[in-house]
Length: 184
Image (cartoon, rainbow, N blue to C red; front, top):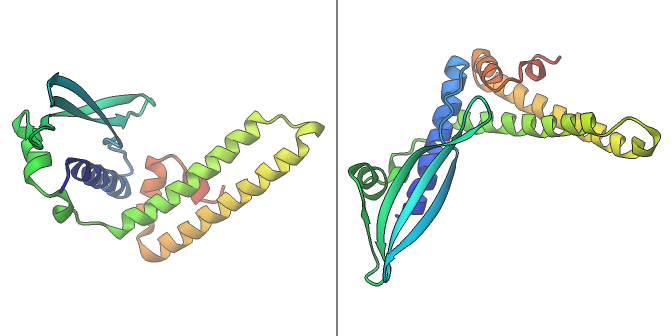
C-alpha cells in the first residue's frame, strides 16, 4: 500500500459516489476529481509533502477541497502523518480493500465519455465557419458528431436494458444532456 495508491483509490471512490448520487437524485455532488502533490525540503533528507484534492464547482471553477500533509524522511525511508485525518485516511486504512465497485458507475462513465466527445465536436462545428474553404473539415466533424451520437445511443440502449430508466434520466439531468438521451 502506497500513499499514491491510497489517494487514487479515494478519488475513484469519490467519483463513483458522485455518479451513483446523480443516478439516484439527479443532482451532482462536485466531489474531488483531481489531486496535486507538492514537497518542500525542511532539513537534509526530510520533506513536508502536501497532497491536495481539487474539485470542479458548478460555476466551472476548480477549488481545493482537502489537503493532507506528510513528513517524509528519505534517509531513513519513513513517512508519518502530520495530523490525525491524514493518518486515518491515507496511512491506516487500506482504501482498496474497502472499495466496493458498482458496475452502474462504469456504464454511466461510458455514457458521459460519449457525451464529452459529442460536445467537443459540437463546439468544433460552432468554431469552424461554414464556407467553401472549410467544407472538408466540417464534413469530417459532422461525421465524427454522428459517430459520437451513435455511441451515446448504444450506451443508452444498454443502460435502459440493464438499469431503471429513472437512473438514466437523473444522470442526464445532473450532467445536462437530457436532449441527447431523449433523442432531440
